[in-house]
Length: 382
Image (cartoon, rainbow, N blue to C red; front, side, top):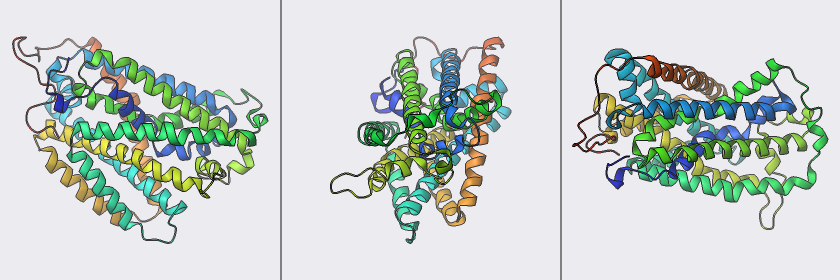
């Protein structure tokens, strides 16, 4: 149990919102387009398989974290424990850079979509800086501010955006999903691998775990987040493929927005504008969560105050905004992030899990039972 102050902790149910935000990102806008290079209309199989794999990885993370003493159940300490101080520090720096890169990719991808769909002729720099200020303000508030933003980002999408997809039900053609099971295993796996890239955000569990008041009660909420994310992807996949033919899908780089754009409601002519506006809250949560994780890991690794780490990351964001100018560069950064996440989350973490099972622990990291453990570390936790 996390016995640290309530100011730096969260309830088990909050893990649902944190993980859901991490699992459903900007990729929801165009993951269907990627299916055209693999399973196509059988992509629902890939979504199910990817969800099962992620659930298994989350189980591994819980077992790995549960085998640590309360004061050492953090990503930084686990890497140093099993690989030594120097190798562990290198791996920690890789994770820190990975979290920062993930935040920046989400930030840049959202800004790029806004520029394409809403403000094609406007200078996007002002909007970029405004979003960055909001992110800085949220991350500076600490774990509870970030968790609260994840909560509202999840509720806005599930309650206001997700139901809108059902308004196109009368335009769907179920025959577009036929024939079923018409693709070989390699095509299915190709699309499954693409879907796993959408789920690489699950690694945030290794950072937020010490802040959960009763971690053993959070397991069901973690699985609930995976199931909810899978349902959302499945609904958007089936509706999109039932609305567009395969030929039409090739012409729509952002199938989700293209589908939503046909919805007509009183007083609202461009529904995708409303969706992207609501989506900002969710993207703020994703960006803030990644930056907070990087700053927290930096604090544990080098004893650098999170406030200073946040300033450094903000300056880095501003520099990258000025350097990254076109969609090709954005795609390159996204590809680097996806491949790195694939290695860290779906190869390295299972390896770390196996090492934790078979390696004989040398020494005990736990403090005396008379001492009060503080798994979040001493000092400023923001």
